[in-house]
Length: 439
Ligand code: SAH
Ligand code: SF4
Image (cartoon, rainbow, N blue to C red; front, side):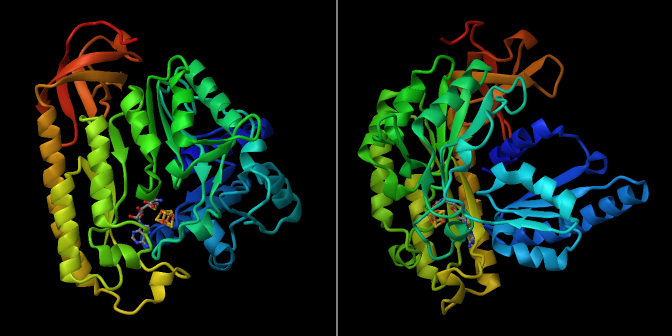
């Protein structure tokens, strides 16, 4: 979502005469777009700001002013702290106010002091942003599109409801218009984004509320959009209608990110996730029944307060039962202000380390197994660029692995059948079945 937000910030600044440059030393303005989800992400902001200060000082010595802005969720949660620890920062803005960035730039120039805007305004920023110059980079075949933001679920460990604000969905017309612009400029593979993307409930033309499956059917009508994905989904909002959309729409890619976090009901309850491990298994069963080639990825947290060895073993068992094609796993990180941060029975660091290693080894094994099952199979690959080796072109599989084949450059931009011949560490290689473009 930060990648998408950064692109939209460039869109708002373009009318003011700004354009992206490659290196911070050449920039009149530097925006650090930040993440607050784990402690490590937040700490990185301060070390990065230290580096930017040196750039600002060096440029000032040559007579060039530099505006430094901190955007995103660290700005939202720690705005005052940023100004205290890094007084050379000029602008601090939260994730819901970047449509006001031009005004902040003007105010910062006038005031000569820091400007801070971390409101949760009543208006939707999407109504105030200029049309995307989609695709965000010309020639892009893939793009993100935010449709929903914020969260009201309040999992025990998570800062998102506090930093991104309350759950809110973007209007249907605005989403469809942006998707059409993207498709017209060449985007083929679109990823709908939201903290709880499948809780989408956007307002339609006559005040009707649309859910995600209804939106997916409408997006599937847009010529050119041959691949539709969405993330991140919550198991609680994985409705039967959405599962049926996976049955009906070939455009919905057979790869779903569905975080489960843990496999023990006791921990799931402590996390306030609102479902059991068996309910998760049941959702997976239903999805695979309608779309047998569907692969899953997930997020896991080890060492949530109160997690015992037995609880952890339940997580390992869930992983063995479900089998994931990909997963992200993290040690529980205490986030100030969240319910779990002050909970008793915090798990010692070395226990978290051991559990994380065991889980990651199992998940890695499953990822390799999944990739191995693709060897010998034939499926469509969307070619996005040249490969590393001469004569090679590279693309994305439906499951997002990079796929390399020998082929001419003019095939870039097309979706073609590839037979997989080999599994490499993080990619696949194969050969073109024939040079016919998919409809
Ligand atoms: N809305 C999504 C997840 C958003 S946060 C969901 O409910 O699944 C992305 C991931 O970061 C989470 O799935 C979780 O695995 C991880 N995460 C969030 N807070 C964390 C914390 N305090 N410590 C460790 N990992 C965390
Ligand atoms: Fe955080 Fe996701 Fe839980 Fe919301 S549902 S509180 S974003 S982990």
